[in-house]
Amino acid sequence: MIHTSKRSIVQPFHAMDVLALANRRIEEGHPVISLAVGQPAHPAAGAVREAARGALEHGRIGYTDTLGMRTLRRKIANHYDNRYAVAVDPERIVVTTGSSAGFNLAFLTLFDVGDRIAITRPGYPAYRNIMAMLGLEAVEIPVGANTGFTLTPEALETVAAESGPISGVLLASPANPTGTVTSRRSLKALIDYCDSNDIRFISDEIYHGLTFSGEETTALSLSESALVINSFSKYYCMTGWRIGWMVLPEAIVRPVERVAQSLYISAPELSQIAACAAFEATEEMERVKDTYRRNAKLLAERLPMIGFEIASPMDGAFYSYVDVSRFTNDSMQFCRKMLKEINVAVTPGDDFDPVDGRHAVRLSYAGSTSDIEKALDRLADWLN
Image (cartoon, rainbow, N blue to C red):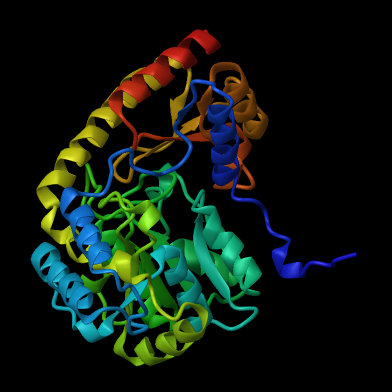
């Protein structure tokens, strides 16, 4: 008998399980519309594909420096200057194999086994699962309308008083699954609290560029001690290219590099070459963003008519997190039944909130408007 480690005993990433089921049904010939995964329907920009094509024709794709190609690191630094008017030394930038690798590197470098990191509930499930596998404790703090769907210094104070100190805070803005955009003022208050209490702050900014309402603020404009994680996956429509980056305080660049050398060697060179061209594609990506804006408006109008109560404002990212308690108290079973009976795939709220998620589902509106319309028609017929 083969025994597995205790580290492997984590909850599945239900969004990926739903995607696998949906793909199986597609292979069987069913007309599935997937609103389950945060994956843009639009391909990577033409300039990105052309850069990759040229690299493949050249033929030699190999290792790069563990920190990434200097050309790409300089372009990322220029991006912060152009978009946020924030000066970032390219030497503080680490190119990663998607943002997922960035989280691994951040957790391994900043924290020891047993350390406690605060995250939102609802929130991205991979945070919780990666922490569990690394022997860290995810301190899930419920957020709602009373907190602006984000973390606050007051909430951190309460947690520390009730269950002990925390070593880190991880916050996404825009957030998955709620779409919350944390205001600059709220973000500053949170970072200032962390800086004053020796709490390491990690800012997940992978949905930057996809803000429809509110202030899109990089933590780099507020603190030199914040660690930022970003990715080409979402705004730049490059999910499968597995390419992201981190911006680090200078003191931890070398520790992160040492860990990354053994875990990843380097991010894929082909994807790095392609990513260098992504910053030239802003006009094309903004047209794609307009599609998300239309999709969000469509969902905001029609979901309440179906009986889905929108749980939080769709200010950013490309998700609608909705209350379906009118129809079920078991969102997992509800999603499986929906996929089987009407070939619409959405993600159960259990993924994002192990306490109250049984009453919620998340819909991604990163696909085409026509697919969103068809899915809504099917839902309306099915539920009413």
